[in-house]
Length: 131
Image (cartoon, rainbow, N blue to C red; front, side, top):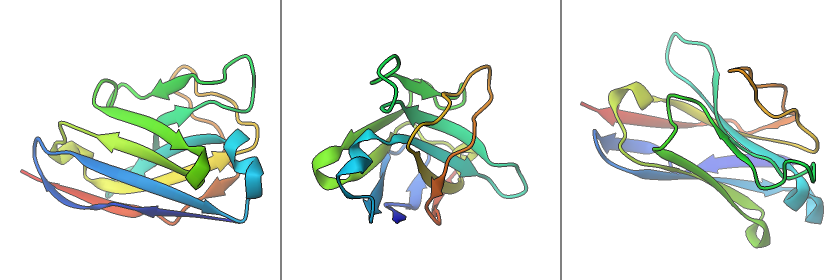
């Protein structure tokens, strides 16, 4: 199984970018995986920024965002393509980081600023926002 991010690059402050995460090897089951995006800025710890809950009927369709991206970033999924996305707007230098997608068959939704274990990870794509 594999997750591959794409769409990173250099963007000016105030600009927008769409990251993609293409899944392979999961088969049709991937549609029911919970999906998240994380990022890690240079010298900082990895942080969870966006999740889409799918596996648990109680929370299916719920989205979760960190305070740092709430209102600017949107997570979405295209099950037909086994791909999910992170639409990023109003980017600033503080958003410069390597962005990672992650998926889990039955994750624990983030709560209280805590983002929990995910089984599968991509290798990351770098986003650089120039000031």
